[in-house]
Length: 195
Image (tube, rainbow, N blue to C red; front, side):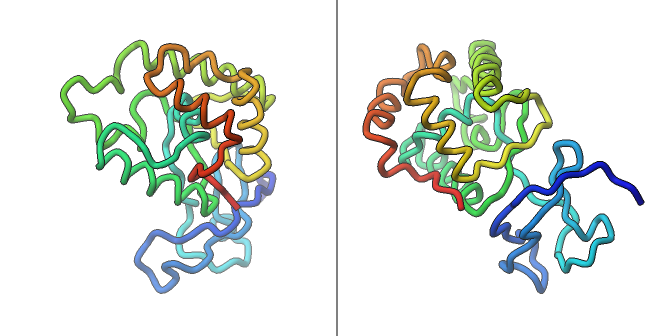
């Protein structure tokens, strides 16, 4: 079988299935076929793995900005608990799959009265964030693309956030002043710290 693939480090990927391999390192090196992370065993390569697909977190583009300054604060206790769980998964090296509309972070809010996750203004925020981040990363950010937030990428994005080059989507956000203060404080105490 011939595949057009490139290797991408996905360090400390943890198996989320309840198998004999649960909790063990799964796919320390995954392959990207297009933009989809795939376990090496799926390609017939000699690697023990519990799952064919590397787990991914579904994130909308403007939440890539929000994650840069996450200190454990949010709209509701359920939102914060969910957010912290997602950040931990990203800290373990799990890739992000970009989505349009409500994502994994939005889930606890979707049934709340006045939930803004489906509003056109939030979709505009996503489009603006995707365009700005794509310029900084030098590649398009479209629905279905994967992003791995390793330390180097996170540092690059935080530098761009601090200098304002990816902050257009933040205009009018209720968290903007807090996030600006966090950036001025060099992101001290932020929860996102991938391998």
